Length: 524
Image (cartoon, rainbow, N blue to C red; front, side):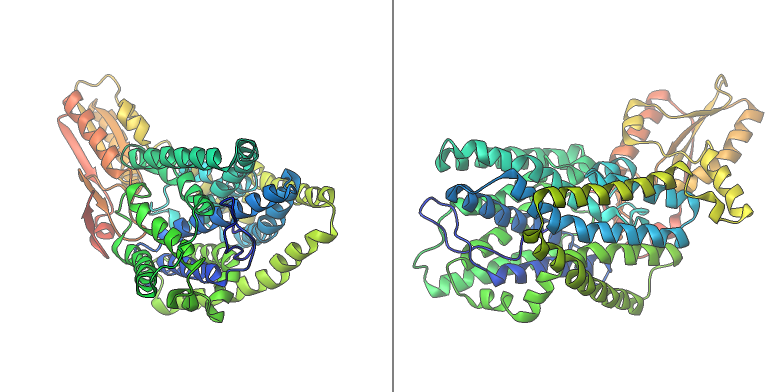
């Protein structure tokens, strides 16, 4: 979730654009957003705290659009300057975090997991982290909480958005602001419609991909074309401001991992954030004064680094802890996050951002290319050497080789299931068939079932998918135990069983895991 430069913008110009003035309540709004995300990931209340990412998208779209329009109005806009600002704002802190995570993984992760970490680092460096995690996991899947760079998917979404967005605004600027605003409205609506449709038909892609997320950023951008409220009655302004804040907090409390998201559900926090920004641009309400309080403003200033550092700390801790982290440990991790974020902001973010004025664009691009090349080289070597297996003991290396070549430890994708493309084991020509249907723990049973079916002359099918209990229309709704694709996978598996008239079905799963915490929740 890369951020624009600290809360800039307030008054709207006669062209519908904005003039640049510092708006401290935007930093306060950032603080609320990052707090929701951190508390959600720490399992300390706010089961829908993931909406903080969407609030950030709205803020980012607003600030970046304002910056571009202001430069276009003055005739000073250039893509080179825009990307120098983006690079110095986003890259240094993220690069340092990735390097530290790779160094920590060298000590903390087994070779196979270190290999996967390096692959995700490569994807992050080339702005494709969202695509990588879409292909390899789900944000709410049970194994996702162990991936140290999972949170960088949102950075990739913003980076991809700002590759083309300024070019679009440059082109539309020649047609006038009216045309520009109409086109942005149409694109926002189109993206939102795709999101609403996709959340029910392609939930994982909808969560991770830019086309179904772009409307959140462009919604913020559209605020730059809306005149601020004039002469709004004080009581009404207060009511609207507090209602918007309550809507964001309410969404973070009412939503859960089982809520289809983003889609229509994302409207509530996104519109609420947009309303707050719009209201506070002209009205000095008590909400605006609250958000402009110095403690909240400081948290907002370090929000980018808070977001960058919190997830690796939790992911590594959960990796080494075989059960749910104790509450005290989670609070200590949040404290460690605050310390790391403050240091990152003070010694990485601020110097790099302030130093850009003394560097030529060529120098900035050259330094970025060098940093990118070094990170890609290191991560590439880790992948090339399969997670640096020499680090592990001979026993661990043997386990790694066995696990990586185990034909049964294979996750069947939803697309495979819908095509009926389930692996055939046992005797492929056997007169009788059976199927093993379950989660990743069912994969451990497959070898024995394969051997038994071969001896009996039976044909066996494998239908296994991580964090997917073999229960139709049900999903595991603990905070990190949900797989949004579970209903689709299970429906496709059941259809395959009916179509093939398979007489014997084995159900296997880690039932104790599904029975604890929040248990099962009906898929909505």
